[in-house]
Image: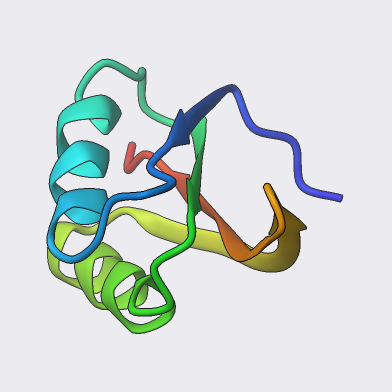
Length: 81
């Protein structure tokens, strides 16, 4: 199981908001810290890897789970050093 330093809840938000909120939140972290983004937007499965590639942050992993009776995704991003 991947451990996160900070969790960002984007449940109920859809593209492009999870990426916009992630971009803002990761600026608050120090290099090397891991941000977990929780989303029920299936698009995050493609959008977050693309965002990481563009920004230089590292996609550590992705998990799928049921939250609030919905399919949800937890994406782990390590801030670039």
